[in-house]
Length: 151
Image (cartoon, rainbow, N blue to C red; front, side, top):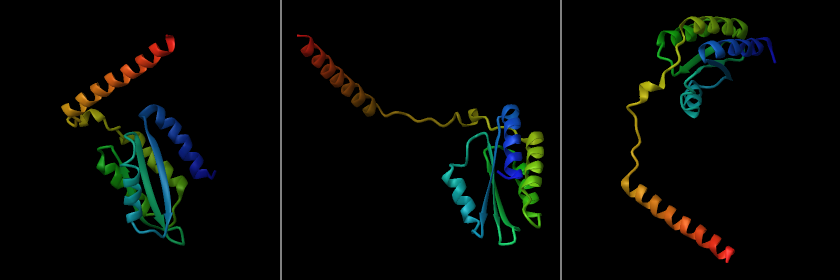
């Protein structure tokens, strides 16, 4: 594990307990920005307590693009961290982790999923009736088999 990874693990332990936060940094090499969007899609936008940074570097370790995603509502925070990463001549994970944890320690607020309480899934009546009938049939079979064994 290199120094940047160790530092990220350290700050994840500290901010995880205080802010309920997990930071991720993923580095791609010579990939189009669609790879960052694909990663976000694959992770379903990440977990509600995650802050994810995807950095693409060229052969000289210069960042060519940075994609930041998180459920947090602080869009300025995402922009500032993205701009910090892109401004580097060479990706420096130690400085990036230090900057990121400092910004997140001050500004990150975990998304409250009560914001999504308007979303509900209604079970159709037909499904409920079929489930009840299947349960009655299965219980009857199990009861019949157990009575048959006791006789």
